[in-house]
Amino acid sequence: MKLGQRLSRVGAVLRSARQGAAFLPPLLGRVFLFYAFHVSGAGKLAHLDQAASFAAALGLPAPRHYAVAVANLEAWGAWLLLAGLFTRPTAGLLALSAVVSLLTADREALVAALELSGRTDVLAVAPLALLVPLVWLAVEGAGLLSVDGIVARLFRWQATSREHR
Image (cartoon, rainbow, N blue to C red; front, side):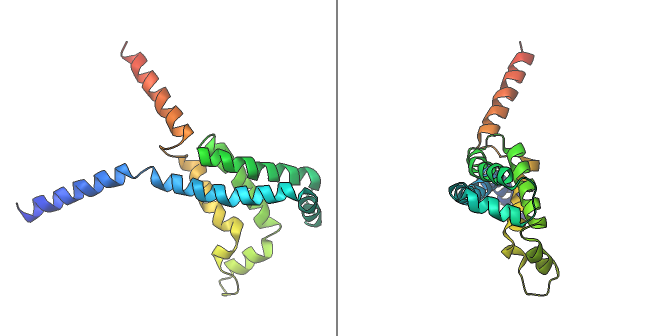
């Protein structure tokens, strides 16, 4: 077998492996985000008065309502992300929450990280580190191994079977 043919076969095997593992990155991202947001949301729900006081200290309007909304969004949104159910809107809302956090509670850390002075690492700013996979999920969706993916394939199959009647 010639070198060109061997390289072609290796390329075909690699492409096949990549396609077979396409479910993995969104799944791992959803598991990572589940852990981060479930822990955070459960902590806020367990200490709602402290979360409301913190929101008030930041000058956010209706701090008690804000704390309740964010705590529930994080705690229940984590489960939705893990299941891959309503992933795009859930990730979008959590991303919006992360942006609010960056502009209020984590503003100084964000500015320090963006100065590239070395005082603060960009990855040390938690909402910024969470924002990247959230935006990715909001744009790309939950992937094949998710409730969203299963429902999408089911509807595609039904639409295809109707066309062939």
